[in-house]
Image (cartoon, rainbow over all chains, first blue to last red; front, side, top):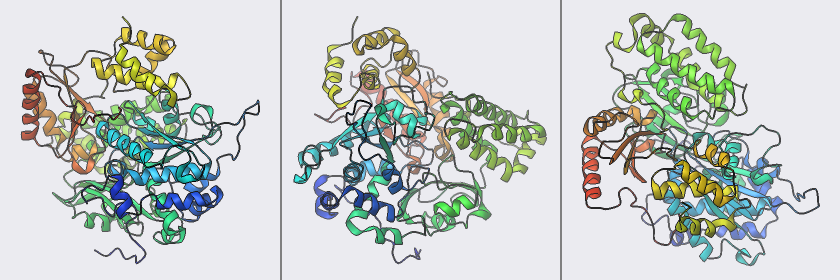
Length: 446
Length: 175
C-alpha cells in the first residue's frame, strides 16, 4: 500500500513497537528527546505560537480547532481586579473515552515523554507555569506509567524550576478522573478538575478567559501535544506539507471493529477510508456495510461513501466528521439498528443531565430504538426520531446532544430499510435474530 | 468515625499542587473508594469534614461519577465493555458466559460477596476488543476460556487472601 505522499513520515509513532520506547533514556537517545524543548526555550513565546499556527496542527481530540490559534487566545498578562497577576494553566485532556478511540492510551504507554515535552513547550508558548494532565480514572496502569515519566522528567531537570537554565518554570500534575464520558468535553473537564460534577459550562466566557480555578486556561488533547516537539524541531513547513491545505501533519487513526488487523495507524490525511481499511488488513467476516469515521459521535457512512478522504474538511463535506480518529468498521452481518442502539444506550447513561433536551432526548432515542428492536416500533417512530434529534442538536450547553444525534439520525437516514423491516416483521425476532445479552445491561452505575 | 490517617496523609501530601480545597474532593473520594471498595454516607460526611465542604457538595460529586460505588460491592469488580467495538467482536458471549458462571445478573453481587458483574464504558481498548477489567487490571482480546480462567484465578487468589486485580501498582509512585 502506497501512502501516495512523499512528505509523509511518522511523527508520533516511529518507535512504538521497540522495547523500552517509553523510557526517558530511549526518548533522548533515539528520538532527539527534549531537543525541541531546548530549541523552543531559546525562541520567544510568540514565535513558538506562530510556528504551531503555520504548521496547521488542528486539535486531535474531536473538534479539530487550530491549535496555534487556541494558544494565541491566551491573554498575555492577565491581572485580577486588584492588579495581581493571575496564573495561567495548561491542561491536557487525557479523558479518552470516545468509543472507537484508543490512540491517547498508546501515547501514554509507549511515548509519554513526547506529550510531556509538548506540554512544556506549550507552557512556554502561552506563558503558563503550571499544567494539569486530566486522565480518566480507569487508566490505573497508564496513570502510573505517566507519573513515572513525569518523575523522570523532573529528575533530568526538564520540569520544575529554571528549566535548562532558561529561567522558565513549569510544573505538571496528574489529576485522576472518576468515570464520566462527558469530562472529555473541555469545560466539563475543567469543572471536574476543580473537584465538581463534570457538567459543561456555558460559553462565553471561554476557558482562555475563565478556565480552571477561574484562571485563563488552555485545554489540548494528548495527541495534539505529542505533535508539538516535531513541529518545533523540524519546522512548521515539513509538518504542514504532510497534509492537505488546512489539515497539517499526520493523524493517529484507530481502526477497530470488523477488520483483520485492528490497531492505531499513524497516517497522512490524504488517504480514503477504503485505503485505511485495506491497510488494516481488510474487512473480516463479511463485506463492508458501514463505517463510523471519527469515534461514535460521527455520523455513519455507507460502504459506497467510503472513498472519501480522511482530512477534516473532506469528512465535513461528506456530512460526518474526523472527530477523534476512531474508525469503526462494520461488516454486512451487523444489524445497523442494533449497533446504533448499543451507542444510544451508552449516550443515555452518559448525558450529564443539565439540559433537558439532552437528558430526555438521549433517553427517548434509546427507548425508541429498543422498541423497534423488540418489535413494537411504528413507521411514525422514524419521523419522531428525526424530530427528537432536531430538538437536541445545537440546542444545548455542549455538543453532547449533537453527538447523540450523529449515529441516531445517520442510521435512520442511510439504513432506513433495515428499520422498516424490523417494524413490519416484528423486530429482531421476526427476522430470525436474537437480541444481544449485553443490551439487558443498563449503564454502569450501581 | 473519621477519615483514616492514611488517606489524610496521602491527600495532605498533594494539597500544595492544587489552588482550591475542593479540587481535592475527587482524589479523596478515590482514596476512600480504593480503601473500602465503596463510598458510604458516613465516608462522605468524613470527607466533607476533612475538606471543609458541606455534605451536599460531597454527595453531588460522589453520585456523578461511576467509579464511586454508593453501595457495597464484591471483592472483585468484573467490568465488561459492551460498547460498539467490543460488541462487534463478541462482548456478548463474555457477558453470557460471566452471567452463567457467576449466576448473577448485571449489577449484582454473588451471594458469597466475591464478585460483582458490571458493564463499563469504552475503555479505549477497541483495537484489542473485547476488553474487560478486573478491579484495576485490564484484559484485552478476551475469549470465554480466558474469562473462565480469570474468574477461577481471582477465586483462588481471594481464598489465599491475596489482593486481586491491582497488579500495576508501582513502588514509590503515586497514585
